[in-house]
Length: 368
Image (cartoon, rainbow, N blue to C red; front, side, top):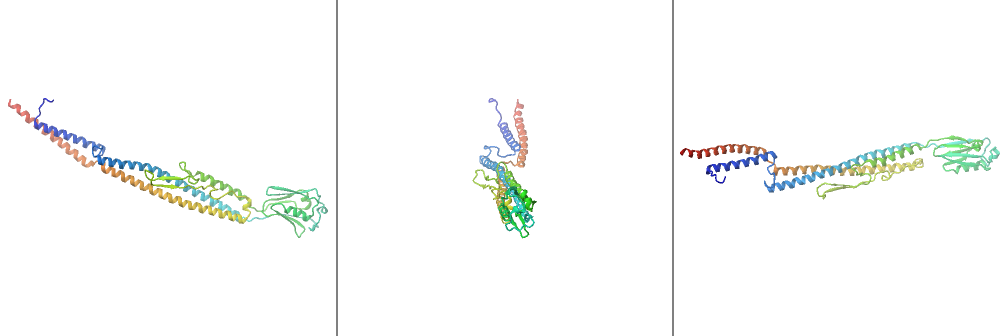
């Protein structure tokens, strides 16, 4: 090929066609990739600047998952607090129902003819001293052996039983009273002989004890179920939400312990409910628990607002970074399309010019 000599006109046209072909290839590549800067060779400054912007956008996009996770965890805790508030309100309603139920004492009264309560010996009334009186109250039974007691002494002995009072009234009858309203059963041969046997149940609040404690167990279960992705802010877990790629911007959310014990609540007993004073104190304690839940709900709500705001902000920053990278590297498809059309026209003209140059060389042959 080195031995072949081209005329200046042909060589100039050939070089022009080669240049046009290269420009067309570059333009077609830009149109196919959509990028004006495809590598550092195209524009080092624009390429590396765009690369930095794109990398940061990718890092922040990863942080969005962390922010979303924190948001969902807070939402789970908030739903848990709503459920706990409803349960504590039910506990309060149960306690108020108990308070509105007035205790009606159990009163067993037995009369004996000619009993004057003034030291009369039971033996004089035909009651054997070896017989017993069985008194059942609150699930517990106490047996009393007469042992030649007088009527007054018997009343005093019965009155020594916890929760029981007994006296000889003006009508000469022994009155046995359970002030808590629970079932009172008096039996035994001596009780029958003395005329004080029988079973009476007043009105009490015992049914509310199980209702209260069953609801309280649900508090522990609900608090334990407010978990999201292994984190439960209601059982003492803490959560840190990072907002940027290096963790220098973050939000730390401190967990709370909102089981029954953490809310200052405990199982109740019949003895608590039978006293209006202790029952009112229990209701006050429930009010305190409700206020604690409301206060923590407000705190979690503020944290949630921060996380959602940063989510929106981060999405905006990512969009800005990607747009900036695109401004530096994206091709102007309209302009490049026009360039391609112009290059195609130039290529056509160059081909024609090359043909004319060859024809000019061929005309020399006509001289021979």
